[in-house]
Amino acid sequence: RWSKQYVAAKTADIKAMEKLIAWLPNNIPADDATSIVHGDFRFDNV
Image (cartoon, rainbow, N blue to C red; front, top):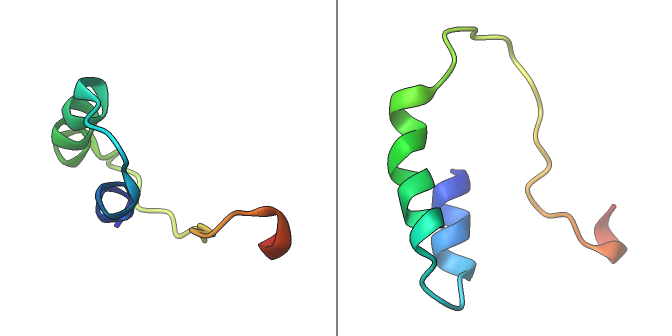
């Protein structure tokens, strides 16, 4: 999900971010603890 949000909002190509997006799926931690992530941080929504 994070990668899709980044791609939808990006304004320039950043090679390091493209590498990170490719790296993340193969490096997900084995721990499957449930957590909540707020994906819309901005001053009027925190």
